[in-house]
Amino acid sequence: MKLNIKVSDFGKIKKADLQIRPFTVIAGTNSSGKSFITKALYSFFSTINKDFVTAEAIRNVSGINARIQVVFNSTKLSMQETTLISNLLEDGASLHEMVLQRYGENTFTSQLEGSVFLIKSTQNLREKLQLVVNIMSAKKKYEKIRADVDQILFSLKGLEQIFEKPMVMMVSKIQKEFTESLKENFQMTSLSSLRNFDCPPERNPTFEIDTIGMISIEGDTVNFKLKSNGIDLLQDFSNIVYLESPIYWRLKSTLERAREFSKINYLMRFKKQDSLLGVPRHFYDLVELLQERLKSNLRSDSFKEVIDKINISIDGEMLITQSGDINFRDNQSGKELNLHTTATGIINLGIISLLIERNVISKGSYIFIDEPEVNLHPAWQKIMVEALYELSRSGINIVIATHSIDMMKCIEGIVNSLPHDEAFEHFGINQLSSEGTSINAGDYPPKRIASIKSDLGKSFFDMQMNGSW
Image (cartoon, rainbow, N blue to C red):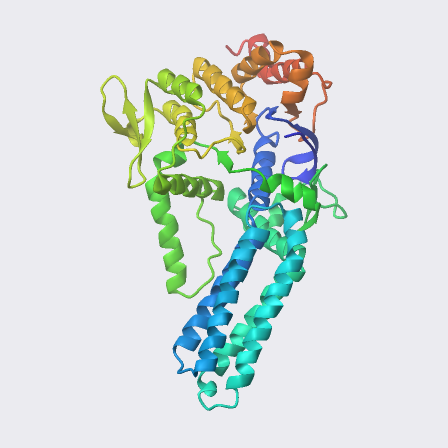
């Protein structure tokens, strides 16, 4: 995917122009804003990737149908009333199927077009329910179900509103979900904390994404100007994944228990869960994806060469048990080892292999990786880069944030082996300064990489010149 993004006044970033390509690199020294950008983009992409329209419509239709069945099954009906209710339930089931057909796997633009037909079907369902009400309202037994019938009619009106204004509902859901995602991924209770400290009062943090639209943060509120075809673009991705510290995987079971305990604790107290757990949402998002693949037992035969390359390098493979635990099976001993006794570098590489094998990372996925070089020997950094490049060539979008010279050298080797046009189209090389601004070293990827290497190597050069070594 090819996108150009302008980021202003967000976190460490003052002003940055980013080129997003099938293989995107965001590089810079410590505290240059790399992680701010990747976490923000993940939060936004993963939010838009959700089909809120279909989910909300199905939830409402299912609830209405279930309530109709329960209410009228608990009431003694005449032959005429029974026939009318049977027809009503058939129409409700048809509406459910129509929602799946008109919405379902369709693009958001197609959903907007299909809403007209759904409005008519919902109005027809409401009219038939009203006919039942008119026949039963004069009877004493109706008093027992009046409140339930009124609730069904109210829910039908709400369903009509979804179909009449799907964009309004979509934006409302996105606004709420994106706000929560930002807070949980950055572990901040207020979005105002994400404002650049040099940002003037009259300006707000903004993201301008050329084919998708604009996002701005005003105080604790997120505002959008989205294009329907931009929503189509992001909803077309299969999975959006963010990979960060391997330490989270070592603590996976403990972190999951802590999350469940926190939910139960708040439910028991009848309070809204508004505290932060200290663990970013993106980790829990990925664990849930992995659990879904575990339940379906869906495995991938694709990318076998990539999986084999990683597993040979770590001399083993990552496994996930039926209970959801992740172990490392060492080839030399044949034993399965708990991640607590497994080297962090092995976890870093092995998790990628496991996610590919379990089809979490597949064609159409979008993968963000913060500092993929963590705990990796330079030789393994090369394997990591080569594996990610192969994935990017096969329809998986890769975005990495790095400050590793060794990793940049590995990327440089691949870029230099490609024709100019192919390197330009496939690689988005972005450099950030310590002041949170873009460094423009020209459009040609090798020049950008050379500038990044020079910047990252400056501290080593200074130490040598000062005799610090």
